[in-house]
Image (cartoon, rainbow, N blue to C red; front, side, top):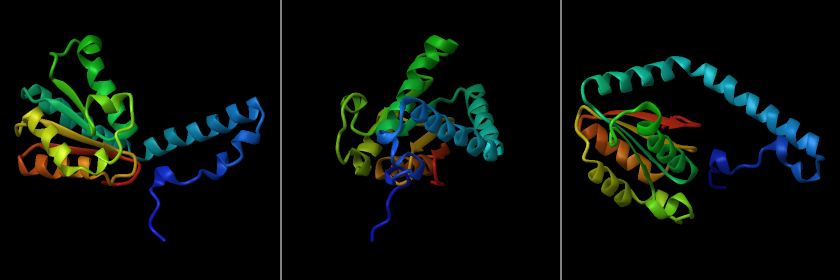
Length: 168
């Protein structure tokens, strides 16, 4: 039996969500949401280290770029797009890329997450330097789009950060 990605398995707590009343649905989702804060708490040292890495890069004139696929990519692009108006940083200081490009922001682009070529093309468009930080975002840690970007970014001397439900 092939391995099933963490994000594609049924959650036992929500298997019968369609049979629950509205209050039960809200309670169930709330209980699942509580698990997120506890999981994050376990990784606070790593999160602090990632924040420090980005802060030092910014102080040295570096940039930050997110690369992700699917919802993970959409969230990276969303965060990047809010940095200059919210925090007043220079436009281009924080960039976001999603497997499948602009179309993938609103529509599924099948198999884009499996394309190392698309990832490397987007990385080339970003034109990273060793001062930059590259963040790979992936729910399951496996898309070739993200992994190829991370591998190449390390080769180019960039700092890299992996953000996933499992270790990249």
